[in-house]
View 1 (cartoon, one colour):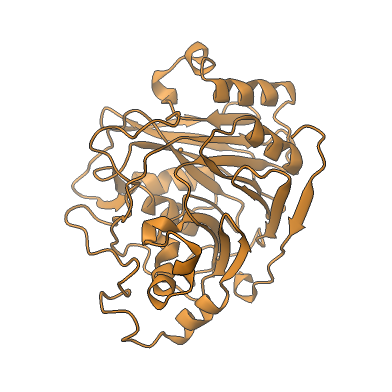
View 2 (cartoon, helix red, strand yellow; view 1 turned 30 degrees about the horizontal axis):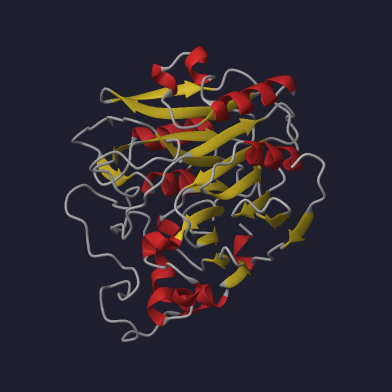
Length: 364
């Protein structure tokens, strides 16, 4: 982006309820989409297009007042297409769902920059198949309010037309279960990326959750990096119908960490300075020399080293543009103390949409 002019589209949502990913190749053989399952074992039928939330034919059950209110907030932002929606009321964060999509390309870049304690930011490129995207606001009665990005093709919505059908709109009511990245009202951010291999921990005494669902649990329940790690420690993470993943967290106090799975153990690599970056190799089994052989990691690390881990919202978006790939679908920057969200879709960095999540708020 450099010093090129930027048209910034400002969309500040007044949400009363919020007072409160490889290098782009094919996925490994036998792998499919990130898991949406809440528990191990058989998955329930997908609630995507053509099904309602309880499996009945679309249109046979009237929507509840909260469901209708949720769908009334649906707005189209651009022709990627990017949509926004504010979920009204609570949801069962451990409900079971099944993926409806097997993507062809993977790869993501993420970084936490907290060299300026007053303005820490988290940047993330989602490099995947081109599909519709949803920026979702939630405020469950039993968890933190949050904003998250959802690839709604996993719910069966593949085009603008699906957002207008009864079946497609009902499928959107499951969107809280699919956060691909997000930030909560405490300024905690989480995101994931693929890795060549991950062998997760399994403990028969723990409940098993899907590889995306665990991020919803983090957003709803954790205010700090330590609490996010504790959420992961309470569950088995299921990659059985998913590419292997690793995860990055950062909190508003300037802490960050990467969680990976190797040899059946959960490995936590905490940030040791004013920044931390992650792409598509395992940090736990790599050296700094081998990491910097990765062009995206090298670009991020050199830029953040030279700035002392400081990056404004605009500069963070520029860094994401510098490491974009041909299949980068969205680039997002979370302001962890300001609550500002900057979002560009389809590598259109001359048009950055802005949103805001109230941050520093209590539970409920």
